[in-house]
Length: 73
Image (cartoon, rainbow, N blue to C red; front, side, top):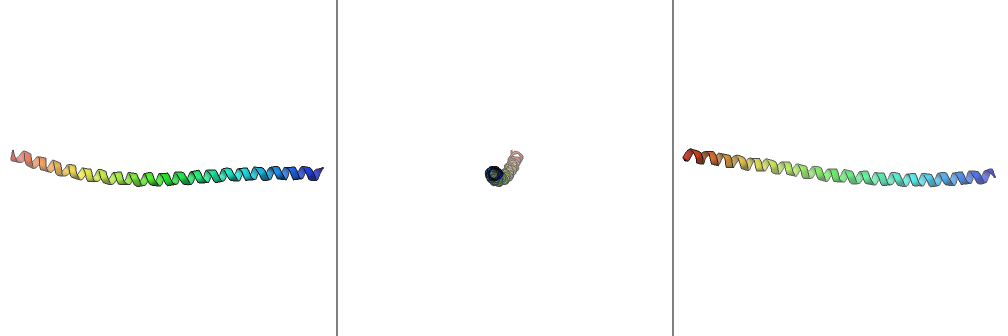
């Protein structure tokens, strides 16, 4: 009957919609995880940049001391 067919189509549509919603939820979760990892990586890279600057300053001091030592020699 038409009512049974309509009910079946409605049921299939509902099942497909729920499956689609589950996929969207999984995608949102994956994107949020990626955002979190990118933020962590960004923080780590900023920390490395600070360390690189500090190393550069130490090397400048070592060069200055080496130049002074060469002047004394």
